[in-house]
Length: 203
Image 1 (cartoon, rainbow, N blue to C red):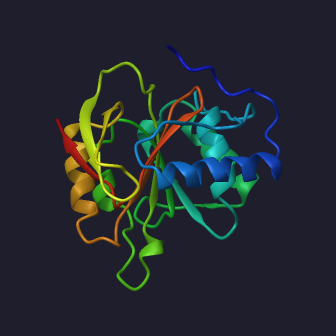
Image 2 (image 1 turned 30 degrees about the vertical axis):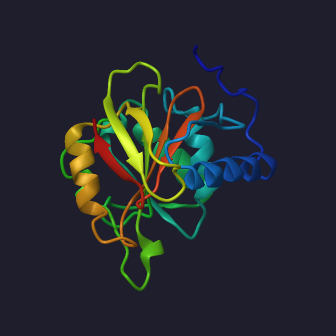
């Protein structure tokens, strides 16, 4: 059954950001579980990106940097300008960014070039926000998830990630707590979080 898209009402900077942040935290605490965002951003200039923009408006501010991967496609430049204007975040290269926005699947080398933090400051590792088609088509990599927050193991079809992407993710997260966190968001407002501590094995 298809999920109903989150309401397209104006995004409220305080109330909607707080509600969205709680959902993101819950999804991070339960990796691989599908959560529905409470709001989208109808002003977003990126086709299909209203839910992605809602997460961006929640996480970005004037103290952080962000990057846009060319695979984000049509509207990517307008999206970058929109995020800079509405959040105060600074647009930088992928290797410098705290948050990286892309559309899946990723081109070779994107994950490898992202910040991973250090053993002393693992929180300086980047977060990848990936716009994916949906979580129901079955046209993706079937994977088993294990790690903190996952009882036993969880099976999920990862639409928007290729087997090569998963291999690059394993390499990027090989020295936990250093690594890259991953948020998958679809156009209807559903989201899955895959923190760096989650182990992913293709089935």
